[in-house]
Image (tube, rainbow, N blue to C red; front, side):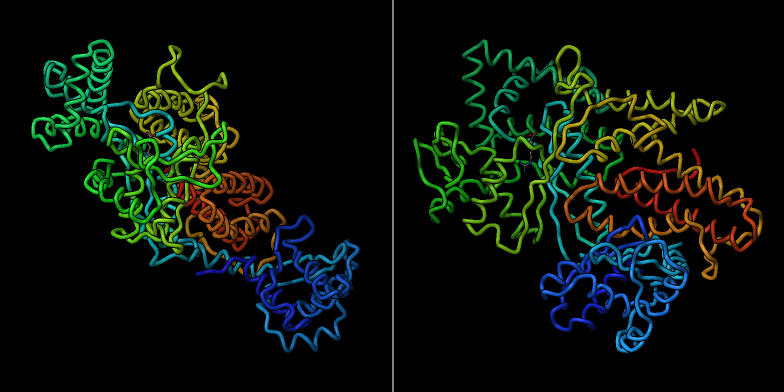
Length: 616
Ligand code: ARG
């Protein structure tokens, strides 16, 4: 597995700092950053000089001398453009003997108040590319083998349409699953379905009284399933609100259901199964990893709720207040200054959403052995999760070494900037929305490929349209709201998946055109053009980008990386002919960069859950 160049440099600079300063430099961060003046710069000398009360430029000069004695001298002789001080060759040689460095540095320059501008050797860039090329992981090592993440995402509600919030949770959750698995983690997907609660009394009662509410013949499409369930929900609600006797029967039905009555359970199961048919249809269209076995709905925790409530009370975490069992928090108060409680058990004896989440934490820690629990849920539930995590910590359900994170996200807005709804103000039907995206993509595919047979156009439009919906979501900073605008999403230009998918396909078309017998391989002996260097450097940053994405659960950083990669590639391809390269060696070397770019785009998109066909 290849270390990134930035990491190799960090090790080198740290070693040089230690050689110069001794223990004072141990563990210091050399702060390696991309640079406009060189391949990288190290900014870590300044804070260190301050810490040892030294002169930063002087320290930088000594470090530079250790790092690249010969190169420093060369830069001097060439009268380097920067007003930097190159290292004196003599004291450097003495020091260099005692500091083993990687040898990737071609030149070091002291700049400004004490920065180090670092230029790499072409051979180092080539070696990195060679090591990544052809490796399915692109040389990026897994860092979290043996660790277990439980991820709670998608979470639609039974007998209801999924809304765009569920779409966001599904798409973001799916990307995180792929990224965390890539990092070597065991990832346990939990689709926390809303499949329990008092509304089921009303639904079951209605279904028992109106068997004709079911569709006449067994229709098995997800669309048919959600269609009759939505009607059922609406009609049951109308009756519940207008007919007090029905409302009474519905309330009694909740009790019989919870008592395990077979007729009630059968109706409940029927609705759950029908809803799942719909969810699975949406998941299949979206091409996400969620499967039936991942559905662990709220009902699963029902048998544990009474015990959890009693336990919280026994531990003194929850107390009775106005008839309800509540957890209070020092710092959580309402606008009137009164404390806002987390309600574990309501005054009518029923358990709510919070009790279920507390039971789920226990299960995820004790039974699933999670050391990290992620909740991909919209930001409006931030307070709820804050309270659940805090209560779970106090009760000891969530030990200090288990991380719980509310991976929150913003809202989806319509082009009018208001919450995304149909013109009639209704929830947008997800299947229809995805169909629309595919329809929109047909135009894009036709524009790119006018002669394509209709069936192929349709197949490509699926890949393009669904990718576009996911990418639009994943490429915006997670916590921000974003506007659902299909025209922009399926555009061939700008930061869209369509642009990236076509860049990837173009790369394959270039590779197909290579003269027969061309070996795609790195030639380490070649000097590199600036555009080649830039591309090689960007490619080398893939692993660090993925690491940053995983660290903060921010898929949009990977999207930005891929977009910049496609642009850097485009620049390279304009400046550095591949098919018409001056020599065979240069052609092969460039072809290697082309192929590695293609592989990086493909893997990067795959980690976001987006496919990139070789031909489009
Ligand atoms: N079903 C809920 C909703 O539609 C989201 C559930 C989130 N997950 C959880 N463990 N509370 O809003």
